[in-house]
View 1 (cartoon, rainbow, N blue to C red):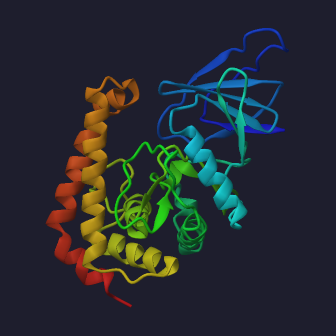
View 2 (view 1 turned 180 degrees about the vertical axis):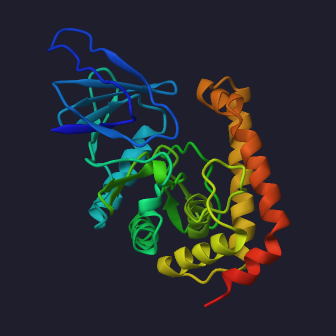
Length: 292
């Protein structure tokens, strides 16, 4: 049995009754690699510690975790099972979810930057949305990201390569649902297009292609999802990045270490540059978005 980890040396925890050994922080820009799984493995990333025991992951719970679990349960019950199964909470209050075996890439490798794989991403987003549309929000629900109107579906909130599990050249699941929230379908799709097309400036480490090439791939992703791309897509990408940047700044101002770390690492400047790039090349994007 193997666990995918980010290019780091990993160590197994001792047997029951002792404290497992952390393996260090995940370096950015590296794929995860297979290492043997012992009885327990511990990983630290950002400010969170995640433990795997067998086929169960233990993660720190938030005030929103029960809502996330209800969404995951509804999505799986509606037929989209390519997400972790919610398993409740352990005696220490940690959330428990099933482990999805495979590989997670921080950045999409060139071998997966093809229409077959990217088309499967778009189609799976559509399937996830169709399943999440069956969820009926209630008064108990708590969301990390405020809901947006019209609340057509429950959005993932962070659809990107680093939240996709793959085996070989196949997509096998989506992970990390902490940011789920009710919102329009396009709100989620626009962010996925930003990440996968990608609609990013050349200075962004994840950027690939010219504006023309990016626009054509964005149009392909939209059509595979089942919608027609146009000016509203570009407007929503801009709105989505601005909302992300505002959220990061607000959380950092509240003392959130993870978001403070993102800003210190220059993520805010990357988003600002991408916003300027999208505005500067808007006419080029619009021209090629509508090509058949």
